[in-house]
Length: 258
Image (spheres, rainbow, N blue to C red):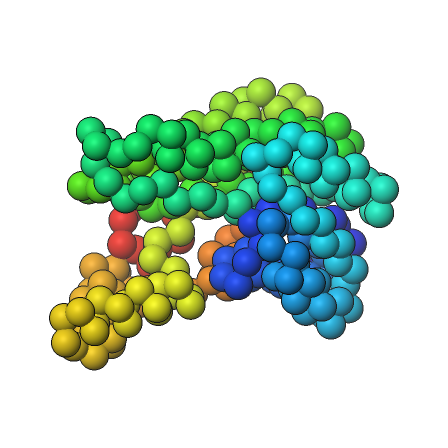
């Protein structure tokens, strides 16, 4: 029970990684604050958290909206009186185009969620996190480890988020707040399974062939599951990581080394 009686705030609750982070935190003893734009998803995950015997607070939140972010912080403190860990998983995908051609307004919109939204939430929760000697975990991506055509806008936003996390670690360390990042590889969840199915249909092959080709690039010969990414987040949020800050933990089954 690494997070026994802690309060974990998770932005970007959806059917994939956000849900896994919330449930794995609850399984380790945490009460969970759930934030996302889609209320139906919040309600569903809240029911799963309470089924595990922990309290869940669902707060519809668009992290791009300063007022909505403030309401999230206020609701958390009103309900629990504390916040021990903040996990920024909210994501807006920019267009997958070359940087030389991408629409800059669309790229700016992604930065508002992926970078500014994360910074905004961290600033709002700073007093509570300082009181709890708590932690912040930013969900990055293995895209920061390589360069590839059309991935530039996404890499730029995640690289900026990584830089924000590292700088915040230096700024907030004197207050006892730890700030780290987790960089997942290909996450073998619903979204990737759908995408591999799409590629397989386009090529006229079985989806398992796409999986095997992708997994062959990893040391473990497989792709990480959402729960495996979430477990790294739980660890970084826990007292077991009390001396770890300013770091980025890559969870990619060995596809890239760092």
